[in-house]
Every structure is written in structure tokens, then in C-alpha cells.
Length: 337
Image (cartoon, rainbow, N blue to C red; front, top):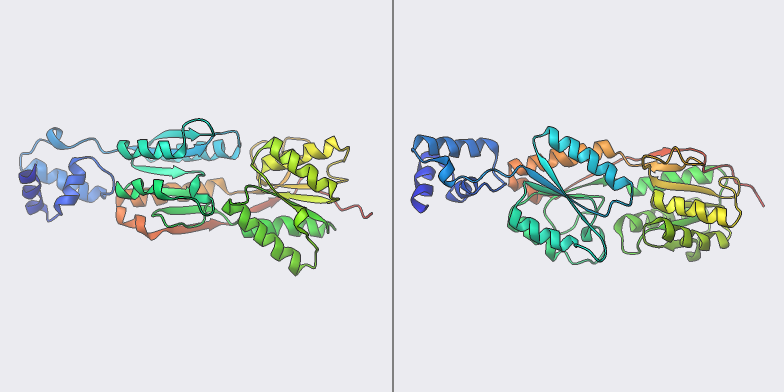
């Protein structure tokens, strides 16, 4: 093998380390360099099949369980784009009590996919241990991270501008005359919720709106948890609630109905995501739309760029897209008491 590497290196001017990656079918080599090495092997009479392993053509998508409808929408869009680019996908879903994100990372380290896309994970949680992600950079496997702030990890970070999302939602409610606005957010350590919280407090201050701590509820993402947390806000007399996900918003609507409150005449509710069915429920949900198409296209194109040249991995690029407010039937002018 050493003689093989030396011969090809001499004929191509490519480093032996890069030649080794081509021979072992590992990612992180541009197509032009890969072809140069393979052509040199042919010219030297070295059989490709004897050494070269098939170049990895699958991309792993790592995501929590798909109960949150926004995740299946991302998976569908990403899968379509990757298929068109000539890649197969491997869906890796995890949840409490089952296979974990760390388990998948260990497995992917041995499978060495062309790239990995994370729709959520430890990376989007404050003060979390990032050690398990090191296996990706060690194996030069490009990674893209959805909706997480840039961490001390190589890769591409893509998402929606949560600060702008919050401003749009609260401005909509304030323009309808709401002054006592509740916040229904995700986990206290979840970066997207942290950003929304900071943006909301800044908005309330700049608009002269009072907002005590009791008007913010932190909870896990889900319908039932959203209902329980929203009940506490409703009992505090809020007239509107901005929710960090559509699931939480549906829970808030359920909580209002259980208290015989009408949505939107007694309580206005704004969600976040614009999951596929939100315009078909009753009342149709006013929500913040994430630009799934633009985000997915940026993830796939950025991942391809890193797969062709793994030196691009260390840039830690961040792309934030502008959201869109969709005003529907779950918000209305505030009834002054």
C-alpha cells in the first residue's frame, strides 16, 4: 500500500494522505482531485477494484421523533433535494428511552456517510456537552445544524431569525391592542427559546408594555405540555399568547377552550413554524412561517460544498433567513376590560 501511495503521489503531485482518502472511499476530497487520483491509478496499471472502496453517497438526517410536524416537512424537502443531487438518505430518529443522538453519532462514525444533517440535538441547548460531535471532525464528515447558534464545532449553521420572528409576532399583537401578552416558550436552556425570550423583553421595554416573570412559561415542546403551561398564563389574565411552536399554540387553544374562552375573541394565539395543517384547523392559526425551502436548499448546497472540499468545514458559516407572519383567525382586536 505504501508503494502504491508513493507511486500515485509522484505522478499526480497529490499528498499521500489525500490519496489514501480516495483509495478508502472517504469523504472530504473534491471530485476533480478524486478523478485525478483514479486516472493516475489507471495509468500506472493499478486496478481500482483492488483498493478503492465505493465513495459514500448517503447523507444521514438526525432528528428527534417526528411528532412535531415541522420535522417531517424538513425531512421531505431535504430528502428530495439530496436525491436530485445523487445522494441517498438515512433517517436517524431518537427519543427518550430509545436510541440516542450519541448512539447514532457513534454508529455514523464507523459508517462514514458523505455528510450529516441535524434538525435538532444537544448543540442547540445551552451548556450542553459537545464532545460526542467530535467524531465528525475526526473523520472529516461534513455536518449541517438547523436552528442552533454557532457552537465550537465545525460545520454549517442554518435557520430562521428568531429575534425578528418574535418582533413580528409581538408587533402584530400590540397593533391589535394587546398589552398583557404571555410568552409560551420551550426548554429554558434551548437557544431558539432563549433568543425569543430576550427579543420579547426588549420589545416590551421599547413599547412600554409591562411583562412580569409570571407571564412567561417555559416548558417542553408538545401539545399536552403547551396546554398545561398556557393554562397558567390564562389564569394570570393574559389576552394574547406568543408560542415558540405550533404544537405549543395548539395546546394553548385547547387550554382556552377548557376555560370556556373563545379564540380569538377572548384570547389571541400566535404560533411558530407554520406546519402544513395550521391553515386548516379551526380557528386557522396565526403563525410565523419558517422558510423551509430556502433553509433546506442552503443546507444541501452548503453540505455539497463541504463534501467536495472538507477544508470548508472549519468556516462555521451561519445563515439566518427572514420569517413571514401569516395572520389568520386565531388573533383579533383585544377586548378592553
